Image (cartoon, rainbow, N blue to C red; front, side, top):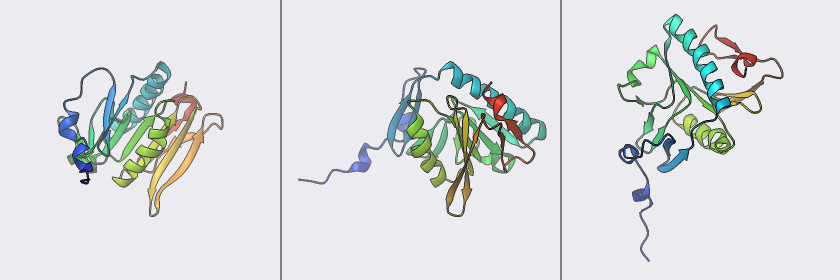
Length: 186
């Protein structure tokens, strides 16, 4: 029996461009098509709060660009994602094109749901780490927590914050940025 060429079944950005505009989030991770339904209300409220807080801070200081989903981030031809939020510093502005981002943003934020928990906490964490995203936040609206994965010499190191502990979200990427989790999850 002949050996099957596995790489021929992998989807690419060219295939991605043919996906329907159906209100769902389509992504390609390591050549596999992933589909996520439209987010629920709590997800959207958290996303809005983060976008306003992070976006205002970045804009007022001219630090770069904050964008929200849906927006394509092309990490490679076989890895196209649509994170909930992302930040690209002015130093990395060359990766921003008219249509998408081509390369790793400085910061990616994913707001998880029951259907995306494993993909966001494991698959995407490994993907973002592999492609050099400096910081990755996994926001859980149900548990009201934020896991921060920061690039270190041995890969991502993790910190977990919670609303219950009255924690404040900060990042080394944006000196002076602090955002109370109580405000994110209100």
